[in-house]
Length: 147
Picture 1 (cartoon, rainbow, N blue to C red):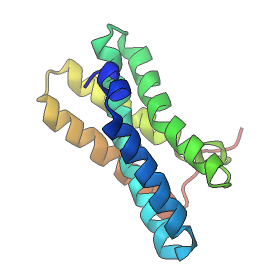
Picture 2: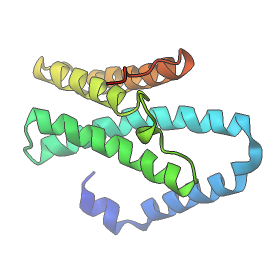
Picture 3: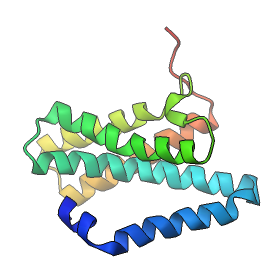
């Protein structure tokens, strides 16, 4: 899917607006809803990491910058969503493994890409890795060391 398609097709805009409306209406549901948001955010991190990397590949960006684009693509949406929800963004919390798990997943994706692994399998491995690392880091209270 190209950027032009996303910007021209109103379906994508309505999907985003629908998601915003659902979050707005269910925001008072408490713990269950915030847990659901956490898991969907973790899945989104994995998917958008791949989306950023793949988009970079399509435009001939080198592998290192492709990983950076994957991390930025994945984390920016969560940053905006947290700001809109009036929460401290996970990206900005001290020691939080948020962008780091995207970088790890992106590096694994690029390494497997260089080994010519099947693209769909590579995507699956990367997304599962990012999601698993994000969930495990939160459950086990794993943080980056302070400098």
